[in-house]
Length: 392
Image (cartoon, rainbow, N blue to C red; front, top):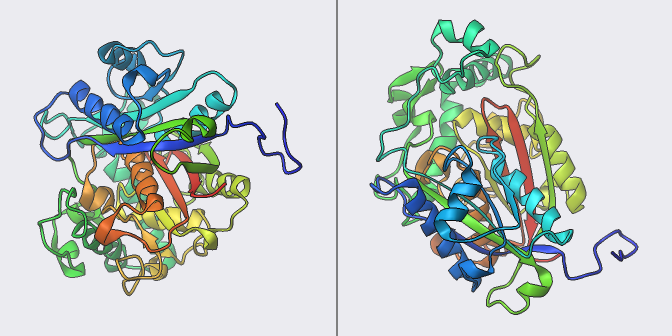
């Protein structure tokens, strides 16, 4: 395959994103397969494609063999699949895998999807979810941690200790997320009214220092994006979104093993993705960061290079990350106020694509041309970053 002097692919097999959509959100009463089908077919309709065009599929959490199960349900026979389970970071990882498959000629149209009915099925539990026969089950499980909450709370407690920040500074992340959600009619908290720092601090303390308002929602929902070649995209109705860079890192599975609770793999995945994109953090217009908990956002902002280490709690103050601020973060309302179906990574991508296409109405970031989506999985265990742009 020919390349130009900068190493870019000269052929039109360059992978681009051409469709994005969410399924029904909230408390739907629908099955996982029903929600997955909604996400896939809506994203394909958005792209101007149909199920018959799909020959690649990446998804998780449908069944033990997720891609096989969903492909059978959809009535398709893909020639490329991926069901890598890496928590909320899986979907940013899928973008890399799918782009590589398309550019290598393994597939022409790939759908990346996820959906969960955890709220209506009452399947979500904060209890001990350690798998039997693992070191975590033996050495951490007996102490009764709330998984994953207690582990993020440990990281938060350490962060507050070493930086001098307080719970009120964590709260700023939740307050800003709610303000964005009030601009998003699809958000679970759209009609709930504004959130204040005091309200966050007064919400029930679940695992110190994290309160209920520091924690993501528990909802049904999900979404999908569609990738194809730049050549195929010329015949489709919408402008393609270019995949400028991607990177990932896997660090640990247990809170006993990291040397530093507040250093995450985002430092590695972000550096790789931004280097591949040829961009600095300051050149990113819209940022979508997995906000499983308020502390996740602060740690990720620092690791991705948007501010110095130990300074994220100051970086987010005074409405900087809220609508009207100078740093557009989690513009859908995020997992804290938009929706959180258990794995939020695909919806970070959906919102990034919509922002770059200028489709976000009241919450639209003016002139957005570059976007970064960063997923986090497990207990700060997996990190994956994708940089997107309206231009190559």
